[in-house]
Image 1 (cartoon, rainbow, N blue to C red):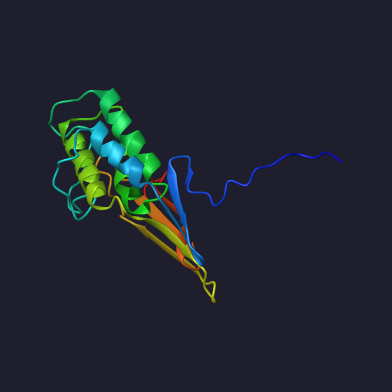
Image 2 (tube, rainbow, N blue to C red):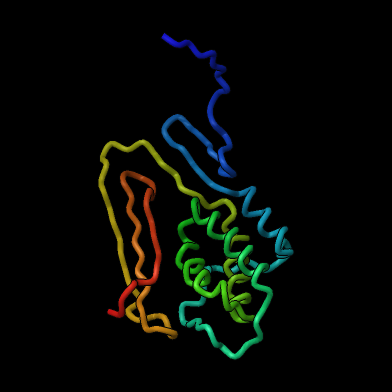
Length: 179
């Protein structure tokens, strides 16, 4: 038999950049500190907040007629937002769409990415709450934009699943084939 010495550090409060707040019958996971670091990193601390991460009618494409930008800066922005989507699935669709243009980012793509960050400013306190419930019900949602990509006419599909009180699985990605 092998014996290990352990120390009880109490309830977990911070793990891999995620803040964990544990109550008697609930756990709340968010990335408030990380969201504020993103705002600071991209010099948007004083920006105006947005109500939605993307303009629903805006359609992005590779060649939009605007000037190309520094790819490293854009990739860094998208990478930060992708990590933030671990506790904010509400930004995942927009970030997923923007990630398609990391190799050919333009001023238009940067403008849309900054809009997502401006949305994050107003939702820094958002996260996922898991509550103790009497009934565990599996609920799933899925949708598609039916040929939403201007460049190749492929659709973007997304889904989210919750079990009980909080979302545990979500995705947004371009379909491999034309519908």
